[in-house]
Length: 168
Image (cartoon, rainbow, N blue to C red; front, side, top):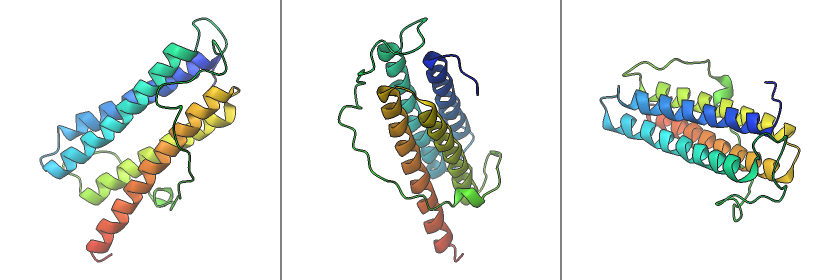
């Protein structure tokens, strides 16, 4: 990834969130089981929240044609009271091969696919956090890292619980 300015970084992140939400929404249509369909739609809704946050940041904090922010102390709605905390990484997805979505795939495979996607999103936001050069950008990417880490942990926990129920 080679970005010329913050606007390109944020635009790229927005595109990734749109792609993720579209992926979950589109694949929910192929599922006949309501539980799996609902789970995919919940994932999509989370990605749309991230998309809106990034769009808000772009509109409020990143000046057109400028290399950086309109001001470094930019505050985005929803971030001013955000509580940061450490999220444990149990690393289940680190040991899972890449999967491709197939309609009707088993629940555990669907969880593995989603875990892997969240792992990639977390890696992206950690990279963007490392490269951020203003406090407001760092805060935004740190929050997105935490959100993706929470999603990853929730999915990995669901996977562990499901596999335990199956006797594995």
